[in-house]
Amino acid sequence: MGAPHGVRGWSQLWSFTDPPEGLLRHPRLEAQRRGQRLMLEIADSRLQGERVLVRFAGAEDRDAAARLTGLELSVLRAELEPPPPGSWYWHDLIGLAVVTVDGTPLGRVDHLIETGVDDVLVVRGERERLIPFAQPQIVKKVDLEAGRIEVDWDAEY
Image (cartoon, rainbow, N blue to C red; front, side):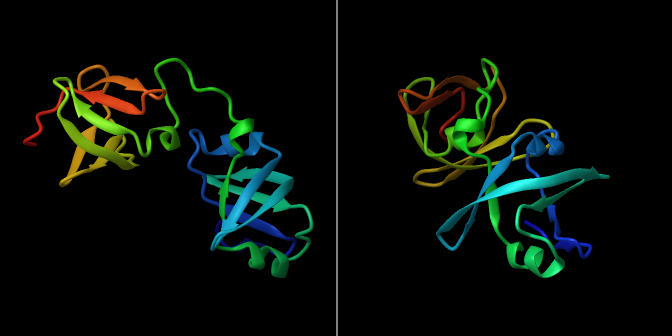
């Protein structure tokens, strides 16, 4: 979460939802800082240009908003809509094993990078690989239950 905005308890949020204002569909957010978790209820919100502004319940002034700066916010899993068929939330892909179509293990998804065209899987195994999440050209199958992603990718890349 970003810095306070104004003097009445508003905070700036950097939203990673698509579109950014999608975050405002959720009435409460889970907040974390150094392993501590708390729930924050959104009292008011608005979009200002590309910025998302919120005022959380109990944050009535700039000092209260300043104490929230630096929190990492997330939507509760139970409040997320299921993704459309053939789509996944990034956090569902992190940790999955990545194997080639012939069964060669490449490692596990460490994180993803948004590039604007195709997102990129950062796969860590005996070395790090950057694999475009291009379906169906490269990513052939995502099997959450089996915990693996099958890719058409040369193990030498």
